[in-house]
Every structure is written in structure tokens, then in C-alpha cells.
Image (cartoon, rainbow, N blue to C red):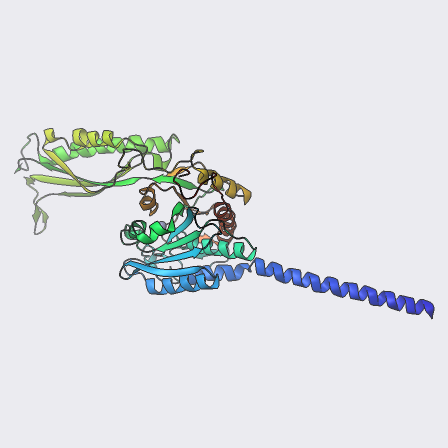
Length: 456
Ligand SMILES: [Zn+2]
């Protein structure tokens, strides 16, 4: 009897212990689920953003603004939409830091996307469907709704983990990047609102990387849209004579082609990265005397024009290029003239290349490298972005800006048909940003740093 009672007591004790263990492990599991939202709902939020059709030329900014502000609300972030230009909202969110006197961190992304030719896609570009391999097909999946949502998801995780930022963290969702950003990031950068944000570092878009490492950009090539024009005496189509407009233009085109090949060869030989050379591509040819059936065939025209999209990296010498254009591509000696449809200087007012430092003078670069490594990611060497992004408006102010979109093992498909991003890479990117935002937002800076430009 005594033994029975004792074993009964023991059994009771044991089952009590088991119950406690069970309850506590269930609570732990629930807590874990809370910290790491399940992947499906994270991906679903991304898909919701992708399904809002913000394609140029008529992006649905009303819907994207509503969506972003409601996401901000769910994260308890301060949020507002500012229209520097009517109908072109900039959504500004703020996660206040404990020391708002320190320069803030700005996470920028654009809300608009390139138009998509539906018929040429194997998946509808605004359905954001995932295939069996987990690839999400949508316009904006790489450029750059992924980044905008990853910032928010990273903040969601940091908040749930109890992290509190030291610096203010701002998010800007800007319109119109795909058409030059003049009514978006440009207006934001010159606004009083922006000055009040006291930004110390800007993160903006980069490019996907087909390799296992991520790419980061510290500058970008500047567009020089060049039109060269040749004039010459018109003449009979059967007559051989010097200095015709066509002959003179063709000599220039040959010269441009030789230069293009020399630059391209440097890339092909692996001596320079794509963004480090001057790219030149002929985009139009305009010549000939029109007739009702096409062109007059027995007349040599008196004018001929060609247009080139030239992209100049800040590391190139713009003066040397100007000399080349004036002396080789459009020399006055061949009756040629030239003009620029657009010419953005790769140098600032003092003549210095507009580049974000990647050495010890810029702590943000080292912090980025460390943070990516900490999240088990790899970062490639700093690159110059081959085209233009909104980052230029911030660099023009003298601010450091880094172009970074965490997409490794992914083909570069921005502006292409069937743009996609895999769920795995998207989720990995959130972990990477979690690490970066944590490092940036808790960076104390040098002693006495109260918003000085020392660390810039
Ligand atoms: Zn973009």
C-alpha cells in the first residue's frame, strides 16, 4: 500500500513535470513563430505590393501609397505621404532612434516600375505568381519592390526581437525613378523635409548578381546623350567628291566604333568592370532625302545626323572625352557640329569625381561589409552602377550613398521580360538587411559626433 501510494505520487509528479515541459515548449514555439513570421505570409505581403500596377507612364501611386502606409501602421512606424509634385507622392516613414541628434539612416526605394509587354511574358507581369521552383514572376520583383518590402520586413524582425535603434531610421518610397526621378528623389533631396531628416547615409538600389556574392555600388555612370551632325554640299548620286555629309558622318561613326570596341575589349578581357569603362551605343541615324516611296536615290544629302547614348564613369576624365568628341567624333574640319540632349557631369562643382568612399574614411562601407558577412553573405568588390539611379541626387549633396539590392544567384532581369526573384533569395535578403539596419542604426560614430559631416 505504502509503495503504491509512493509510486502514485511519483507518477503525479512526473506527469506534472511533463505538463510543465509541454506548456513551456509550446510557448517557446509560439514565441519563435511570432519572431519569425512564417515565410508564406512574408512572401504574400511582397506579392501584394507587386500586384499593384505602378508601371510607367501611369503608375497607380494612390494604391501603393495606401499599401505602404498601412504596412507602416502595422509596424508602428511614423508615416506620411508628401507630394512635392501633385499626384507624385513620396512616402516617408520614420523609426525613431534614442538619439535623434545623430545623423539618420535613409533606406530609399522607388515605387514605380518599367512598363511590361504582357504578351512577351510567360507569366502575367502583375499577378506575382510563384512557379514550382518558388520563383516569383513580376515587374518590380528585382527593380525594386523587393528592396522596399525587405526593408520593412527586416524592421519587423528587429522590432520583434526587441532591438531599439540609436539613430533615426527613415524609409523613403519615391515615385518616378524610371523616368529620371525629377519629380521624386530629386525633389525630396532638395526639400526642407529632407534637411530636417539630417541624413548621414543612404541605401538605394543595386543589381542582382548571378554569382553567389552580392554586389554593392559606390557611384554611377553619367549619361551624355550626344548628337553629331555633318553638313556638306549636296550632289548627284553618281558624282564622287570630297566632304559630303554622309562621308563625313561615316568617318565619325567609324571613329566612335573603334573607341567603343577599345572600351568593350577591356571588359571582355576582365581588365575593367562594366561600370568602369565609357560605354557608347549608337541609338539613331538620320539622313537622306525623303520621297513618296522612301528616299531619293540619286541625290547625296546635305545633312546627316547620328545619336549616341554615352555613359561616363566618375573615374574617367570628362575633359579628355570632350576633346575626343570635338577633335575626332565631330571635328569642325569635317564640317561637323555636336550637341548634348543630356549631359550629367560625373564630377562635382569642385571637379572631384562623385563617388562614395569605400575606404576607412567612410565607416558605413565597412559596416555594410561586416553586416553582410555576419549574416553569412558575401560581398563583391565595390562597383560603379552602369546606368543612373536616384542615388545620384543624394551623392550630389555630398552624402554617402550605397547601391545595394541583396539578390545573389539571380540573373539580372531588370527591365527585361519575365523578371523574377526566388522566394529563397527574397527571404535571405531580409536577413541581410536585418543585419545591416541593426549595424547602421546602432552605429555610435566617432566621439562628439552630433551631426557633423566628419564621418561622411
Ligand atoms: Zn530601379
